[in-house]
Length: 395
Image 1 (cartoon, rainbow, N blue to C red):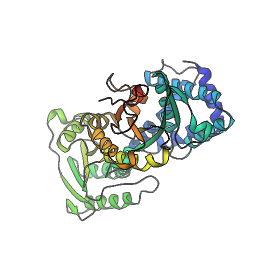
Image 2 (cartoon, helix red, strand yellow):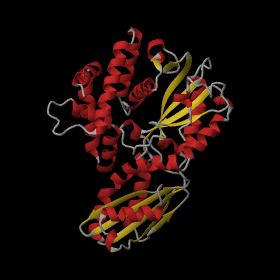
Image 3 (cartoon, rainbow, N blue to C red):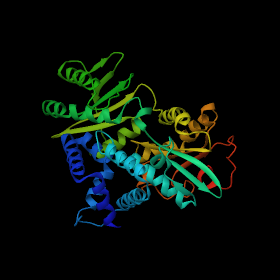
Image 4 (tube, rainbow, N blue to C red):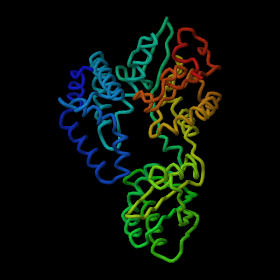
């Protein structure tokens, strides 16, 4: 790991900008417990870079941190090879990544995609940075060319109930629950069904105060149920076996009972336990959201002058959800449905990846070659031997 690249990267970002960014991340993370953990996960790349730049990080770098360092190096090598216009665009992308709710994921997805294609034997030109094209990379092999457009979509776009909204709700309620448990010692389970879902992007979370007030009113009143078209709430005693008594065992029990899409939380105070399980009124449709995004960007990000590849990065997902999307063929089904649509006529292949592949956290799986890949069999270049490493389906 070459610390020179790290120093150059931080210089490119700007020392003051970098310090302000890290201070903001830590401030947000310290403001609340559950939402704070989500902030740390969301900004794991920035935190890894900041730790690696320390003269005495305290422990050897993890495999994920080594991968982050490699992408920093790829970014700086790319910066050196770009023309002046390309360097300006790269600096602008970096500046955008370090503001508001943005992250370094889009930039590093681009850099990882370039490195991946280069390792497959392609010559890679950063057309988006150098030439301002709508696609990001022009890849060439044995005389054949393809356009590659990188895009990031949040799995939240396919959820009726946003994980971020849930964490903020639980953090709001938690102090009330601890106070209530002190006056009502015991074990309780609050089941919530939200037919209209719960969606918000902080700070625009107007639904949260309303739901919070309803839960508090139910706890303070004589009734243990409340329902209307927006929410169905029911508070019951929580019966626990010995193996379910600790928080980990309880969460495992609730997950088994309410399923993988349920949102769960546990608050403990003294000897009291208050568990919550919430579901939206409809199943998650992350793969369908990706299909809709593909249909939106294909006509605008690809020129149609060459075969096009859409490289999708699915953000805000965890290991369990990502494996479910893969193994249940939800991604494959929705992507192949898109490839039959007229909007896909420019697309020779679609690839999908997540933070698990970016950080090298997924179990080794040679079938996927670092990404899920789906070829469009109707495209004229689908059987091109030169493009095969980038377009052949991985499953």
